[in-house]
Length: 155
Image (cartoon, rainbow, N blue to C red; front, side, top):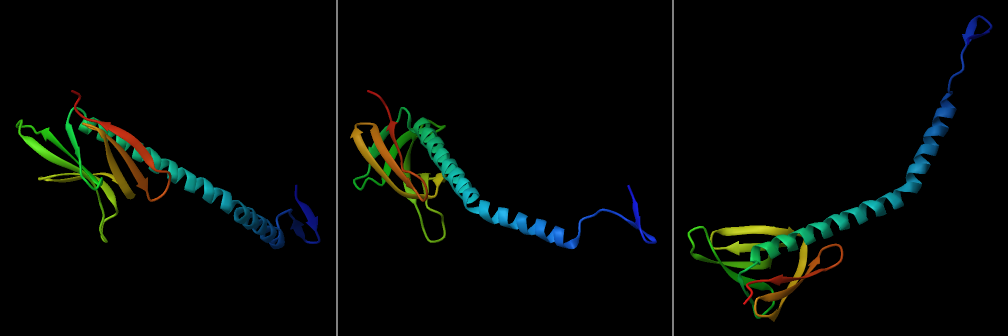
């Protein structure tokens, strides 16, 4: 409905002040909600990293299943001998690797190269419980440590 005020039509609309007040309220609400949203994003990131670590543990278990496992004296690496496609034994090393240029990682290394298994690993410890049974603890850069057991060849 158009009302007339003098010679010009009068229309209802937002004024500049009403628009600025609405923007101010929007900024205030956004500012107040920032900490809870940041917490949710941080927790989701930690959950994602923990899920990646658990998936890496499962993949590692599938890789070592049925193989002979040997833990190094320092507890920082595990060796296993596994037949390759030509039925020749290949020695694999499961270890933590880090340098100034590479993100710390858990990797599987062989004579032909390496395969990163998990990134952002701060510390790893392997402990031989009995022959071919190795317990591990991975400490990630963020989130809780991941513990598990690798089962090699059964006798």
